Amino acid sequence: MRSPRSLLRIVPNILIARLGLAACGDGASAGSDPALLDVASKAFLGNNITVDDKPLRLVKGSQLRLSFDTDSIGATGGCNSMSGAATWANSTLRVADDSLAMTEMACDQPLMDQDAWFATILTASPTLSQQGDSLTLVSGSTVIVLTDEETAIPDASLTGTTWTLESIATGDTVSTVPVGVRVSLQFNHDGTLSANLGCNTGRGDYTVSETSISFGTLATTKMACEPPASDVEQMVSDVLRNDVDFVIAGKTLSLAGRDRATGAPSGLTYRAETP
Image 1: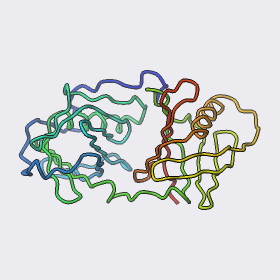
Image 2 (image 1 turned 135 degrees about the horizontal axis):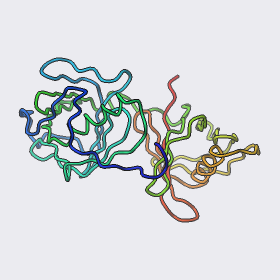
Image 3 (image 1 turned 90 degrees about the horizontal axis):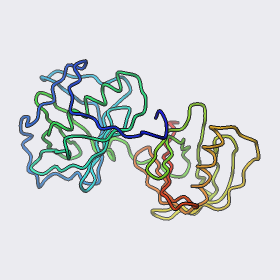
Image 4 (image 1 turned 180 degrees about the vertical axis):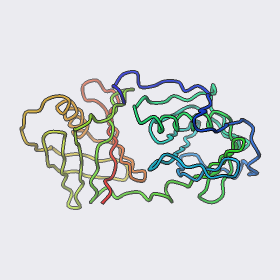
């Protein structure tokens, strides 16, 4: 993200002419019974897209992701994250106020265009159908087929995996890790923890339950660090001193706690490194 401030902007229902795609509301019926849609608390991803029955290629290395909560959705077109209140009754996805909130992380222009195009699709009331692990969105002549994330990307193991920090949340603010700062965690099978905090390294103990992790005292090196590494290290250390809730979704590890001084929510999002 460009900075920890001004994180959200509202994405208008626009057409990205550069991609040459039309996102028309009330597209062809997906032909599914609404009672059969089983999407709440699930995420779907993929890059299987056709327009006028012709394949559409996404930006190399990217894919779409769409997640559902009780009454909201989250999404990404390959760069920024989007979220908004939504319903999907009668097999039609409707986003509240015909808009989504989107983070403002700067990416290459093709990825940002792809984000905006996907936002246009999502806010155009596409129809939904589900068959097994596949979810299909239809908007006009555009058809997007996604796969249940749990099938496409099995959850990584907490232990024995090197987790690299991607973002830090403090209150309502989410910021990415500054360029050149590396932060990682490794939960060892013997109950010990190895950490790179951004400048210093540390070791400690941890205890894990089904939904939470309790961190013991972290013994660290004493190198003097300059910002932004020192700022990141302080925020990470604050979270790792607390008992935190954790969730693993595919290759992503989310740690959620609270700031000890203010009580505000704080959290860290890590991604599993590919061997």
